[in-house]
Image (cartoon, rainbow over all chains, first blue to last red; front, side, top):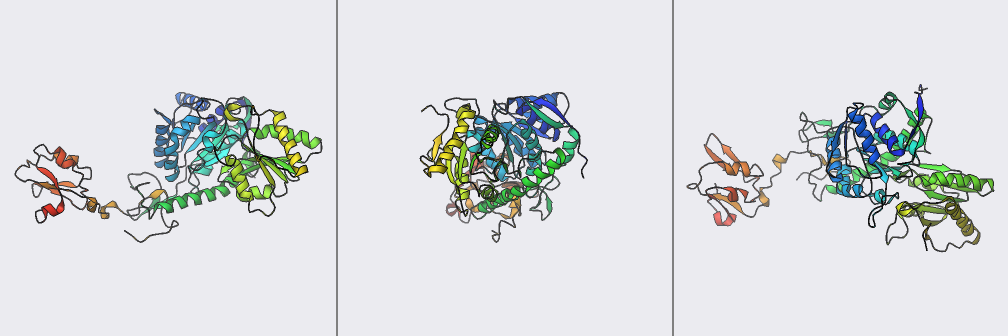
Length: 410
Length: 99
């Protein structure tokens, strides 16, 4: 039995919770460029640096492209590396996101999810990181500030696992989580430093005929990520996919290990279910909206309606088997997407869920709701209406329009 | 090139298992540098400008030497030479005259 270290409940917004977690993980390098609604994270972290509370090298770069480049380079030397961004900033990093995952550099990045221009909008939706879903980064989306704190700590342990060795995005809904003050239970610095531990390095075989830790080291020179011709490039991409598959297991392990320390767990680390076991109708969602849905499900349950919520916490790697198992008894499902995939058949989450269930023995009827774009509030009565719609589909068997818009002025 | 290997055998991150010393890139070139020994003052400007390090100073010979195993024929040496002692030519034009 592990002796549980003490926790203290303090008021933090999501950004501050992220900064505190990064501080406690004893990060070696932070390279960042400010952008709303992430700015508080790097502002807070630069305060820690100025106060001498951390030994971190803080690099102020001239752009997000440079920030990610600096993070990648730092991680390549074996340093623990952190950054944060959002929206246009993340979009500017696009090229370097692929380089970072291809380098197998375990950078951890918080994304305070925000809409993309045009028209200009600084508010929350998930268009930014959903657009980067094929960049080779693990993606974990949180429900509240507490989970943001816990997930940053977990992210380093997942990213730096030698069988994973991939960068991680922790997504927190812009403003809804990033700027909202909540009660957050936090540890002191030492237990977290101990939990995350020293960064582990995978071993690689180099041109000198030696097997050495994977880092830039003058004693053991190596060439990382050079030109790979058509007869090798494909193989390195397959290796990254293997890292993703290993992450599926590692995320669950870390979630359970962390729950022993903190008393908090988020489902199995991949999916967080609520009243789903005997549910006939359910909503699948990513991010903070799950909180509101859980309250509505409580009301519906009191009224005798068998409703549930499935929150996808880990979007990359996508937990296909776990999702099939979680939804196997549900009759009708609504998938909510806080981003659009223009010209596609529904949003990204809808696509993944529907695709995963196609081969399942019995799969539910599935509809898609696009919602919350550009910070449009998803009101409780609107969310409740989705459950009413699902009941109607259940009763009549008539699906109607499969891709719908919630809260849009028609 | 070496025998093709499975993704399971390769080091992650594209780490090279072989040195580039054995990977000759000199056959990529179309034009090759040809030096006029009468114009060359051995100022070594070409040695410094060669992006491939393919022009070397040989102290025992007191002269420079072109390593055609790595010279890609970019022509920077010819462009930088202050006495215009280097010209870029097709190899067949210079058959038998290559140093």
